[in-house]
Image 1 (cartoon, helix red, strand yellow):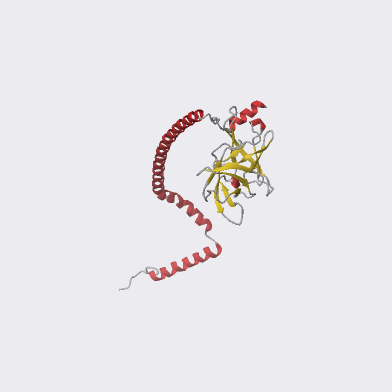
Image 2 (cartoon, rainbow, N blue to C red):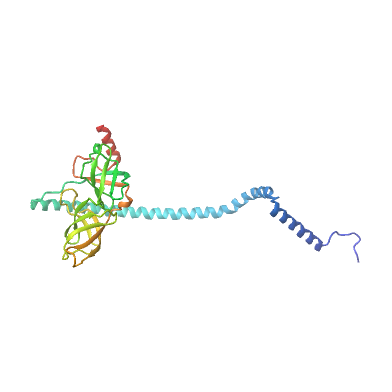
Length: 291
């Protein structure tokens, strides 16, 4: 039996109409960006819902990260406490060794080493001459700097003070071709001379006989001879030992342990007991009092 009243378009016609409208909307939006403004408003309306939906996950992530960070801080704090005790024990051992060393030196009638004081310095400029390895630092005569004063970084010997100004000084590096420093092999005490080669990564050791006990990897430290450098500070490490019988002496090269091409901060060593020690603030204050 047919219905008395017409029920409208059929579902198939509705589907075709919806598809046509969708295609038209997609075409106008893609080609003419007609709905950018409407999309922006809709995005603004939906954003709070997105934040609310992500809130539980963000809270869980924040809580887990803070728990992990707190656990790491507790572990690091415990490690620092253990290291502090370990270092305090080392300081006590060093104090005992120093006292024994002083007693032994007094028994042997050998002069006791004086205390080495330290002064912090920063590089102001680097010499642009490729054949001259020198730098200028921000310490001068008003800070108690003197010519020949040894300079080092956190790894080893860097050089010595060449010229002293009122508020700045010039440092000649151990790699400079005109510089030489007496050293000894830490392994066996053999004495050598380390001369600059003009290359920041190479020192030359001349007049070493073929029979000398020198091996690649040997650490060279200051010998204390000459009185300019304190004894025992690292200088370089042997990288090449070549025994050519056609030559009178062996060819030996070493590499400085100090990072000469990356220098920025230095320490100046001094045996003057009246010198101020190791703090930029204290040295600046001392310089201001003198002026």
